[in-house]
Image 1 (cartoon, one colour):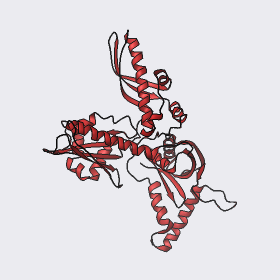
Image 2 (cartoon, one colour):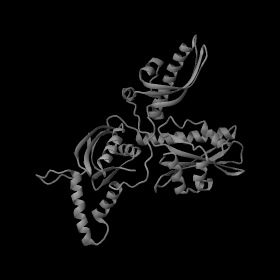
Image 3 (cartoon, rainbow, N blue to C red):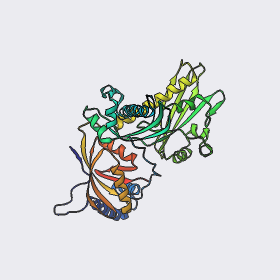
Image 4 (cartoon, one colour):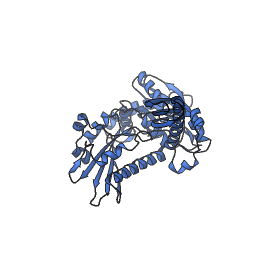
Length: 399
């Protein structure tokens, strides 16, 4: 097991919190800085920057984490039997089986789907923690409904671990997807009557590790982001749109109709909130039977690519275990409790040891599975920032 330390050992006979060691060094560097007269560089300049980030907690408003990764929503069921009750039992069990298959594919790489076990209704039912029924309709022998099913995390992990199938259970935060279509009439946004917007209504944007939401297109959306601002990448307007939906990034999905019938080209630009550089992906469809078909194919390809990229970054392979020792910065004990709750929400972290704690900071050891990169990714999704400064690991909330 790898162990990542946060700091160097104190001199022999001296016992003190690593967080207090760092504080003492900072105070010493402050005194030295008076002599340097703002000469810049060195340890103090870097430490000061980190402390402003961590102690003062800059970085903008944190959005809510994505929903429970072990819950599958909007599973349509339809069954007929000799009675309404029997039809309901058949429908619910089949819905649970399908929901579990959706969940297993959500958590794993496509290349491993062939290794997934065949699940029957009773096996799926045994792994269910709870379920909710919506839009229920029934007759004497017919039953229709929509299910939301929450599975037992431990049972799902055990099922995959027993087959040595690597998986990810760290969802990305929800992104706002803004579809813009350019055709013979011009650039179109907030227009429901086009094939590009319609394609996204057919895509399952909820049941994945990279959930997305298409804006409602109400007056608030229209005044927050114009088509010109979307296409030009206006960062303040895009950040405002992200804030409306509690997201940390906006995807501008720009599609252009080609000269040949059934052809469509697209450019997807993902804008993170803040100063991070945007990421771009382009695609093209031609020869489709209709513009709607081309739009659906392009939308599906983008979602598939986004899911694959995220899983590759966050996947956990068995045998990868380590311990991270870090100093935690906060401004109050209430904020410390918030950080603890967020850490408890991270599945990769198997144990948290509190080495030392004070009113200004704490020293913790995190036992986790995966790599430092997958841990960092999971921390980010819980609005926690991890930084390595000259061999010292710092952890703090971002809000």
